[in-house]
Length: 314
Image (cartoon, rainbow, N blue to C red):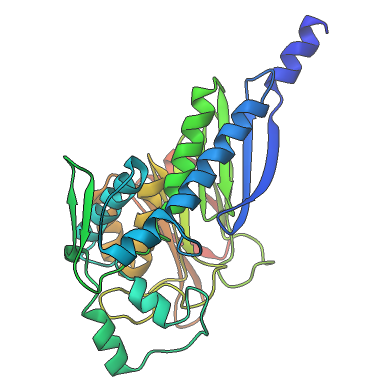
Protein backbone atom coordinates (compact mmCIF):
# COMPACT_ATOMS: atom_id res chain seq x y z
CA UNK A 1 0.00 0.00 0.00
CA UNK A 2 1.45 3.38 -0.96
CA UNK A 3 1.63 6.22 1.58
CA UNK A 4 -1.08 8.35 -0.05
CA UNK A 5 -3.59 5.51 -0.11
CA UNK A 6 -2.83 4.72 3.53
CA UNK A 7 -3.52 8.34 4.51
CA UNK A 8 -6.79 8.35 2.58
CA UNK A 9 -7.97 5.14 4.22
CA UNK A 10 -7.17 6.42 7.71
CA UNK A 11 -8.94 9.74 6.99
CA UNK A 12 -12.11 8.13 5.59
CA UNK A 13 -14.82 7.51 8.21
CA UNK A 14 -15.73 3.95 9.10
CA UNK A 15 -19.42 3.46 9.83
CA UNK A 16 -21.43 0.69 11.44
CA UNK A 17 -25.07 0.35 12.44
CA UNK A 18 -26.35 -2.15 14.99
CA UNK A 19 -29.51 -2.74 17.02
CA UNK A 20 -28.93 -1.46 20.55
CA UNK A 21 -31.20 -0.27 23.39
CA UNK A 22 -34.37 -1.12 21.54
CA UNK A 23 -33.45 0.85 18.42
CA UNK A 24 -30.83 1.57 15.79
CA UNK A 25 -27.42 2.88 16.82
CA UNK A 26 -24.92 4.33 14.37
CA UNK A 27 -21.23 4.81 15.17
CA UNK A 28 -18.69 6.49 12.90
CA UNK A 29 -14.98 6.87 13.53
CA UNK A 30 -12.05 8.52 11.75
CA UNK A 31 -8.31 8.54 12.27
CA UNK A 32 -7.68 4.80 12.63
CA UNK A 33 -6.06 2.45 10.14
CA UNK A 34 -8.11 -0.41 11.60
CA UNK A 35 -11.36 0.98 13.05
CA UNK A 36 -12.90 -2.37 13.98
CA UNK A 37 -11.64 -2.53 17.60
CA UNK A 38 -12.84 1.04 18.21
CA UNK A 39 -16.27 0.32 16.74
CA UNK A 40 -16.58 -2.86 18.80
CA UNK A 41 -15.57 -0.97 21.95
CA UNK A 42 -18.16 1.76 21.30
CA UNK A 43 -20.96 -0.76 20.78
CA UNK A 44 -19.84 -2.69 23.85
CA UNK A 45 -20.22 0.53 25.85
CA UNK A 46 -23.76 0.99 24.51
CA UNK A 47 -24.62 -2.62 25.35
CA UNK A 48 -23.28 -2.23 28.89
CA UNK A 49 -25.64 0.68 29.58
CA UNK A 50 -28.57 -1.29 28.20
CA UNK A 51 -27.67 -4.29 30.39
CA UNK A 52 -27.44 -2.07 33.46
CA UNK A 53 -30.34 0.37 33.03
CA UNK A 54 -33.02 -1.23 30.87
CA UNK A 55 -36.52 -1.79 32.24
CA UNK A 56 -37.28 -4.23 29.41
CA UNK A 57 -35.05 -7.02 30.72
CA UNK A 58 -33.50 -8.24 33.94
CA UNK A 59 -30.94 -5.54 34.71
CA UNK A 60 -29.16 -3.83 37.54
CA UNK A 61 -31.92 -1.21 37.54
CA UNK A 62 -34.79 -3.70 37.72
CA UNK A 63 -33.02 -5.44 40.63
CA UNK A 64 -32.69 -2.10 42.42
CA UNK A 65 -36.36 -1.33 41.85
CA UNK A 66 -37.31 -4.71 43.31
CA UNK A 67 -35.07 -4.53 46.37
CA UNK A 68 -35.27 -0.80 47.05
CA UNK A 69 -31.62 -0.73 48.09
CA UNK A 70 -28.34 -1.68 46.43
CA UNK A 71 -24.74 -0.73 45.86
CA UNK A 72 -24.79 0.63 42.33
CA UNK A 73 -22.16 0.19 39.67
CA UNK A 74 -20.17 3.36 38.87
CA UNK A 75 -22.16 3.80 35.64
CA UNK A 76 -25.57 3.48 37.27
CA UNK A 77 -24.59 5.68 40.21
CA UNK A 78 -23.28 8.46 37.92
CA UNK A 79 -26.41 8.34 35.76
CA UNK A 80 -28.58 8.61 38.85
CA UNK A 81 -26.49 11.48 40.17
CA UNK A 82 -27.01 13.49 36.98
CA UNK A 83 -30.70 12.59 36.87
CA UNK A 84 -31.31 13.72 40.44
CA UNK A 85 -29.35 16.96 39.95
CA UNK A 86 -31.50 17.90 36.96
CA UNK A 87 -34.62 16.80 38.82
CA UNK A 88 -33.78 19.12 41.70
CA UNK A 89 -32.86 22.08 39.48
CA UNK A 90 -36.00 21.63 37.38
CA UNK A 91 -38.29 21.41 40.40
CA UNK A 92 -39.31 17.90 39.40
CA UNK A 93 -40.14 18.63 35.75
CA UNK A 94 -37.67 15.85 35.03
CA UNK A 95 -37.82 13.06 37.60
CA UNK A 96 -36.33 9.54 37.39
CA UNK A 97 -38.96 8.23 39.85
CA UNK A 98 -41.76 8.62 37.27
CA UNK A 99 -41.80 4.84 36.62
CA UNK A 100 -45.10 4.08 38.41
CA UNK A 101 -46.94 6.60 36.23
CA UNK A 102 -45.25 5.44 33.03
CA UNK A 103 -45.95 1.78 33.76
CA UNK A 104 -49.59 2.36 34.71
CA UNK A 105 -50.17 4.26 31.46
CA UNK A 106 -48.77 1.41 29.37
CA UNK A 107 -45.43 3.06 28.61
CA UNK A 108 -43.44 -0.06 29.51
CA UNK A 109 -45.16 -2.55 27.27
CA UNK A 110 -48.69 -2.62 28.67
CA UNK A 111 -51.90 -1.46 27.05
CA UNK A 112 -51.91 2.30 26.50
CA UNK A 113 -54.51 4.07 28.60
CA UNK A 114 -55.32 7.35 30.32
CA UNK A 115 -55.17 7.41 34.09
CA UNK A 116 -58.15 8.52 36.12
CA UNK A 117 -57.79 11.31 38.66
CA UNK A 118 -57.86 9.05 41.72
CA UNK A 119 -55.41 6.54 40.28
CA UNK A 120 -53.08 9.32 39.23
CA UNK A 121 -53.21 10.88 42.71
CA UNK A 122 -52.40 7.50 44.27
CA UNK A 123 -49.42 6.96 41.98
CA UNK A 124 -48.09 10.49 42.48
CA UNK A 125 -47.62 9.67 46.15
CA UNK A 126 -44.85 7.29 45.04
CA UNK A 127 -43.15 9.81 42.74
CA UNK A 128 -40.58 12.40 43.77
CA UNK A 129 -36.81 12.74 43.43
CA UNK A 130 -36.50 13.37 47.19
CA UNK A 131 -37.55 9.73 47.68
CA UNK A 132 -34.12 8.59 46.41
CA UNK A 133 -30.97 8.74 48.55
CA UNK A 134 -27.44 8.39 47.17
CA UNK A 135 -24.33 7.74 49.25
CA UNK A 136 -21.27 8.83 47.21
CA UNK A 137 -18.86 7.15 49.64
CA UNK A 138 -20.32 3.67 49.12
CA UNK A 139 -22.37 4.17 45.92
CA UNK A 140 -25.38 2.89 47.84
CA UNK A 141 -28.82 3.79 46.48
CA UNK A 142 -31.89 3.70 48.70
CA UNK A 143 -35.48 4.08 47.52
CA UNK A 144 -38.42 4.84 49.73
CA UNK A 145 -41.14 2.15 49.74
CA UNK A 146 -43.13 2.11 46.50
CA UNK A 147 -40.60 4.23 44.61
CA UNK A 148 -39.25 2.86 41.33
CA UNK A 149 -36.79 4.36 38.88
CA UNK A 150 -37.09 4.89 35.12
CA UNK A 151 -33.89 6.16 33.49
CA UNK A 152 -35.32 6.27 29.97
CA UNK A 153 -34.84 10.05 29.95
CA UNK A 154 -31.11 9.95 30.68
CA UNK A 155 -29.62 6.50 29.97
CA UNK A 156 -29.25 6.96 26.21
CA UNK A 157 -27.33 10.18 26.75
CA UNK A 158 -25.01 8.46 29.20
CA UNK A 159 -24.54 5.62 26.69
CA UNK A 160 -23.45 8.17 24.08
CA UNK A 161 -20.90 9.54 26.56
CA UNK A 162 -19.43 6.09 27.19
CA UNK A 163 -19.29 5.20 23.50
CA UNK A 164 -17.51 8.44 22.60
CA UNK A 165 -15.05 7.85 25.44
CA UNK A 166 -14.33 4.39 24.00
CA UNK A 167 -13.58 5.91 20.59
CA UNK A 168 -11.23 8.47 22.12
CA UNK A 169 -9.46 5.79 24.14
CA UNK A 170 -8.93 3.81 20.95
CA UNK A 171 -7.06 6.78 19.47
CA UNK A 172 -9.71 8.09 17.07
CA UNK A 173 -9.33 11.69 15.92
CA UNK A 174 -13.07 11.99 15.41
CA UNK A 175 -16.17 10.08 16.31
CA UNK A 176 -19.94 10.17 16.04
CA UNK A 177 -22.57 8.24 17.99
CA UNK A 178 -26.22 8.53 16.94
CA UNK A 179 -28.97 6.71 18.84
CA UNK A 180 -31.90 7.30 16.56
CA UNK A 181 -31.43 11.10 16.54
CA UNK A 182 -32.92 11.47 20.02
CA UNK A 183 -29.40 11.30 21.48
CA UNK A 184 -26.25 12.16 19.55
CA UNK A 185 -22.69 13.14 20.28
CA UNK A 186 -19.54 13.90 18.35
CA UNK A 187 -15.94 15.04 18.68
CA UNK A 188 -13.52 16.11 15.96
CA UNK A 189 -16.52 16.17 13.65
CA UNK A 190 -18.41 18.93 11.88
CA UNK A 191 -21.87 17.45 12.28
CA UNK A 192 -24.77 19.34 10.69
CA UNK A 193 -28.06 18.66 12.47
CA UNK A 194 -31.52 19.04 10.95
CA UNK A 195 -34.33 20.10 13.27
CA UNK A 196 -37.12 17.90 11.96
CA UNK A 197 -40.70 19.03 11.62
CA UNK A 198 -42.17 17.89 14.96
CA UNK A 199 -45.55 16.97 13.47
CA UNK A 200 -44.82 15.64 9.98
CA UNK A 201 -41.82 13.34 9.58
CA UNK A 202 -41.63 13.81 5.81
CA UNK A 203 -41.97 17.61 5.85
CA UNK A 204 -38.95 19.89 5.36
CA UNK A 205 -36.87 20.50 8.48
CA UNK A 206 -37.63 23.62 10.50
CA UNK A 207 -33.95 24.47 10.87
CA UNK A 208 -30.34 23.34 10.54
CA UNK A 209 -27.27 24.03 12.67
CA UNK A 210 -23.72 22.84 13.39
CA UNK A 211 -23.40 20.68 16.48
CA UNK A 212 -19.67 21.14 17.06
CA UNK A 213 -18.02 19.10 19.80
CA UNK A 214 -21.10 18.67 21.95
CA UNK A 215 -23.79 16.17 22.83
CA UNK A 216 -27.37 16.59 21.69
CA UNK A 217 -30.74 15.31 22.82
CA UNK A 218 -34.21 15.96 21.42
CA UNK A 219 -37.58 15.42 23.09
CA UNK A 220 -41.04 15.43 21.57
CA UNK A 221 -41.27 15.77 17.83
CA UNK A 222 -41.52 12.45 16.01
CA UNK A 223 -41.99 10.48 19.21
CA UNK A 224 -45.45 9.25 20.29
CA UNK A 225 -47.74 12.23 21.00
CA UNK A 226 -48.20 12.99 24.70
CA UNK A 227 -45.69 10.31 25.73
CA UNK A 228 -43.78 12.76 27.94
CA UNK A 229 -45.44 13.16 31.32
CA UNK A 230 -45.11 16.02 33.74
CA UNK A 231 -44.02 14.08 36.86
CA UNK A 232 -45.49 16.78 39.08
CA UNK A 233 -49.04 16.27 37.85
CA UNK A 234 -48.95 12.91 36.07
CA UNK A 235 -50.50 14.56 32.99
CA UNK A 236 -48.96 14.77 29.50
CA UNK A 237 -46.74 17.80 28.89
CA UNK A 238 -48.28 19.96 26.15
CA UNK A 239 -46.49 23.33 26.27
CA UNK A 240 -44.14 22.65 23.33
CA UNK A 241 -43.91 20.53 20.20
CA UNK A 242 -40.23 19.66 20.63
CA UNK A 243 -36.99 20.65 22.31
CA UNK A 244 -33.36 20.15 21.33
CA UNK A 245 -30.61 20.63 23.90
CA UNK A 246 -26.82 20.80 23.52
CA UNK A 247 -24.56 20.13 26.49
CA UNK A 248 -21.03 19.01 27.24
CA UNK A 249 -22.27 15.53 28.18
CA UNK A 250 -24.99 13.35 26.70
CA UNK A 251 -26.57 12.42 30.01
CA UNK A 252 -26.97 16.11 30.84
CA UNK A 253 -28.44 16.93 27.43
CA UNK A 254 -30.83 13.98 27.65
CA UNK A 255 -32.29 14.93 31.03
CA UNK A 256 -32.43 18.64 30.21
CA UNK A 257 -34.30 18.17 26.92
CA UNK A 258 -37.08 16.34 28.78
CA UNK A 259 -37.15 18.90 31.59
CA UNK A 260 -37.29 21.83 29.15
CA UNK A 261 -40.08 20.13 27.19
CA UNK A 262 -42.15 19.87 30.38
CA UNK A 263 -41.32 23.37 31.65
CA UNK A 264 -41.98 25.28 28.44
CA UNK A 265 -40.26 28.38 27.08
CA UNK A 266 -39.52 30.69 29.98
CA UNK A 267 -38.71 28.19 32.71
CA UNK A 268 -37.07 25.80 30.28
CA UNK A 269 -34.66 28.43 29.01
CA UNK A 270 -33.91 29.51 32.56
CA UNK A 271 -33.01 25.92 33.44
CA UNK A 272 -30.70 25.58 30.44
CA UNK A 273 -28.94 28.78 31.43
CA UNK A 274 -28.55 27.59 35.00
CA UNK A 275 -27.01 24.32 33.84
CA UNK A 276 -24.74 25.91 31.22
CA UNK A 277 -26.51 24.26 28.28
CA UNK A 278 -27.87 25.54 24.98
CA UNK A 279 -31.00 24.70 23.09
CA UNK A 280 -34.04 25.54 21.05
CA UNK A 281 -37.77 25.01 21.47
CA UNK A 282 -40.50 24.60 18.86
CA UNK A 283 -44.20 25.42 19.00
CA UNK A 284 -47.13 26.65 16.93
CA UNK A 285 -49.36 29.52 17.92
CA UNK A 286 -53.18 29.57 17.77
CA UNK A 287 -53.01 30.49 14.07
CA UNK A 288 -50.70 27.60 13.26
CA UNK A 289 -47.61 29.73 12.69
CA UNK A 290 -44.24 28.12 13.43
CA UNK A 291 -42.10 29.53 16.24
CA UNK A 292 -38.64 28.69 17.53
CA UNK A 293 -37.00 30.10 20.63
CA UNK A 294 -33.30 29.65 21.36
CA UNK A 295 -30.88 30.28 24.16
CA UNK A 296 -28.97 33.58 23.76
CA UNK A 297 -26.33 33.53 21.02
CA UNK A 298 -27.29 30.10 19.69
CA UNK A 299 -27.75 31.23 16.09
CA UNK A 300 -24.36 32.94 15.93
CA UNK A 301 -22.45 30.10 17.59
CA UNK A 302 -24.02 27.27 15.62
CA UNK A 303 -24.84 28.85 12.25
CA UNK A 304 -28.58 28.37 12.71
CA UNK A 305 -30.54 28.52 9.46
CA UNK A 306 -34.33 28.21 9.44
CA UNK A 307 -37.20 27.86 7.03
CA UNK A 308 -38.61 31.19 5.87
CA UNK A 309 -41.90 30.50 7.68
CA UNK A 310 -40.29 29.89 11.10
CA UNK A 311 -40.22 32.90 13.41
CA UNK A 312 -37.10 32.79 15.58
CA UNK A 313 -37.01 34.32 19.06
CA UNK A 314 -33.90 34.68 21.22
